[in-house]
Structures are given as C-alpha cells and as structure tokens.
Length: 408
Length: 102
Ligand SMILES: [Zn+2]
Image (cartoon, rainbow over all chains, first blue to last red; front, top):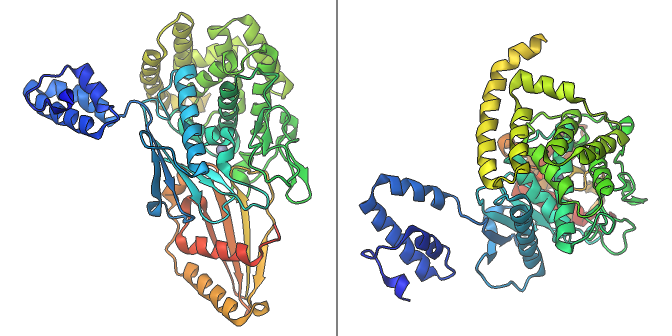
C-alpha cells in the first residue's frame, strides 16, 4: 500500500501515524514505526517525548491469550490468540478473550477508564493453567484461569463475572491499592465482586431486578447443588452442601467474621466479610432501580479512586455517601445511607467528613473536587488525570500530617 | 511416611476443601518410591519469593505436611503466586492418588 511504503522521506501527520501504528497489517505498522523514528530525529526532542509517551502506553488494552497447556510455569505457555489474530478453536481461549474485551469496553464506556491502569495497559490472560486447577487469580500483572477438577468446579472462564472480578483486582491495584488484609482486603474483594457483577449486568442489559447478583454461577459442575460462589444480594446463601460446606459470608456487621490474618484465615476473611459491602451495594442499587452500573456503579468507582490502601468499611461508606450527594442528589445520598445502615454501618455525618477535609485537604477533598467537576459535565479522562495529581499531593500532605493525627 | 495436603483461600475463599492424605506404606512399591522422590524434590527447593506474593489476589494456598515414620514432621507452604514446578507436581500426584474423593 502506498502509505505503507512512503518510508523515510514522507512527512506523515502525527495523527495519521498514530492510526497507522494501530493498523492490523504488520507491514503498515512497521513502516509507520520507521517513519516515526526517522522524522523524530528531524523534528527534535520535544516531538520524541510526546510520542514516547504514546508508544509506552498502548492505547487500547490489547489482549493476548496464552495456553498454559496444563503447566503452572507461565513461561512455558504458548500464545493462543492475540488482539488482531484469528479466533481460536479453543473455547476457553475465546471465552477469556471475549470476557476481557467486554470488561475493557465496560470500563471505557461506562467509567471512561482506559484498561486496568487507565493508560491502556495490555491484558494478558492464561488458560488451562495446571492440572484440574480449581481457581482463577490475578498475579499482580496477569489473569490466570484453571480448568476446574470436574468434580466441584468446571472451567473458570465460563463466568463473565469471574473474568471481570479478576480484572477488577488489577484496577484496584492501580487505584486505591487496598491492602489484602481484614477490612481493606474485604473491600478489595467486594470491589471485584461489584464490578464483576456490573460487567455482566451491563453486557446482558439487565436491570437491578433482572440481574442474578451472583459470582461464578457457571463454574460449578452440573451435579453440584450451588447457585454460585457468592451472592451480593444474599450473602451467606450462595451454597450449602455436604461436600464443601455452607456459604460463610455475613450480610451485617453484627455477623462480621473475625479470622486470623494468615493464608489459612483468608487474610482476615477477605472473601468472607466482603459480603457486608457487597450487600450494601446491592441494597443501594435496588433502592435506585434501573441499571446498577449507572449512579451506583459510578459512585462506587469514584469512592474506589478516593480510597487508599488502609481504607476501612466506615471510611468507604462515608465516601460513597458524600459522593452520592455531590455527584447526584439528596435522594441518592439518602439511599446510600440507608443501604449502609441496613448492613450495620452508620455513615458519619457532614461534620465528620468536613473535619477530614479540613485536616488533610485529604482524599475526600480530592474526591469532592472530581465529583463536582463530573457533575458539571467535565471530561472524565481529563478529570482522572487531575484527580491523580491531586491524590498524589494529598498523599504527600497526609504523610506529613501523620504525627499530628497520632497526637489527636 | 504420611503426606497430607490442605488447600485454602482462592477465588472461592469460603469453600472448605477436604484434606488429602496418603500413607506411603499403603502404596504399591513404585508409587511409594514416586512419592518419596516428589517429597524429596520439594524439600530441596529454595525459599519462597515473598515479593511475588504481595500483589497476588485470589491465589490459593497449599500446605503439605510430611510426617516421617520416626516422628519428624516437615511443613512446606506455597500459594498459586509462589508455585514451583516441583510443588505443583506433588499436588497433582496427591490429587491423582485420591481422585474420585473430593
Ligand atoms: Zn478476588
């Protein structure tokens, strides 16, 4: 093609080069890259810098599916499908590919977030991990899915909410980075369940009433009597059978399960106590009606952005309450307060929130500013950058304020 | 020798997984030798890479307890995030040895 061959002497406008770099045709991409490298030498460092940023962050969260071929050693895995490649013959590969695509699109279209890190981070997933592997997990960089043991579990790629749950762990890591222990850990898990469920609801265009609010409803083998591994609507009622026990999730703070902060104790019950914030989200969404990914999803997402590694249930509840008022109206704010009250958490009043703002010009202030601009119809991607900058300043301020806080 | 595998956590963190136990003297000769070999392999492994574990989410944990006939007990722990090929081979073998019982 002409534009692919124009080579070093051709002056191609940057926006066209950008398009060519994303071309499906390898020749075109390579030629565009050569042109870019050559022209940047002519145009000087400033141009190089602006394009270096673009090249370092692929724009779209490109997907690569890997087949572990039953090994647990990831370097042995083979590439099974790429963003531009053909469909695979392997259903697990295609399910993971499509599931990650739907999830990526949800974050982009609903929350205006570009992939896991907000900057187009590539999406790598591994299927057929290990032998009869009964789990799916996020390893800090990639998503890994097992085939199940065919006794209790089948293939973990079968539930879109499971795929979206794992990807959400990446989003949390790149935002609040909630510690994986006790309440912050349970919030981390809850965020993955909430957005796991919302991605599925959004894909199926389900209302709050139509949605099943279940996580992993398709990963049990047919013979297993269980609805799912968790229920946001009814924590503690997802399963009850002789083979592996009863769903231990509480749905109220009075039933919070105190467990040791060890591997065996699920790091203080992060997969157990997530039932409490899960239920709060469901109750709020149910009170609002309609599509849960709209006001409820956006409020929870902004609360995640405003959180920090050690955020507790109470602080998260307060943040959602404040954001509901700022992003929407008193009706939403009242519904948020009521949802948290039903799970045993009383949101702190305006005085407490104001005190935090005054003390730290803190995260709440940053979230407040973002919410205000969002309400006024601002561009969320621009806001997101402003927010990150604000949050960084806030963290710096807070670290400086720590001794003062301790005295109080 | 008695080897017991327990697993916990993972995406379905609330599920309680039954322990799997195998006694080498109850196994046919070749199988007992295979188990001895797999156990020796995980004993000789380097310590866990704690750093990899830090950012992992939903990883399942595994504890292998080795009780020698002489009374000595060794406990080796791994998780999906710190899995080694040798440890994975032992888990796979123990799962296979008790296949059919969940
Ligand atoms: Zn999780």
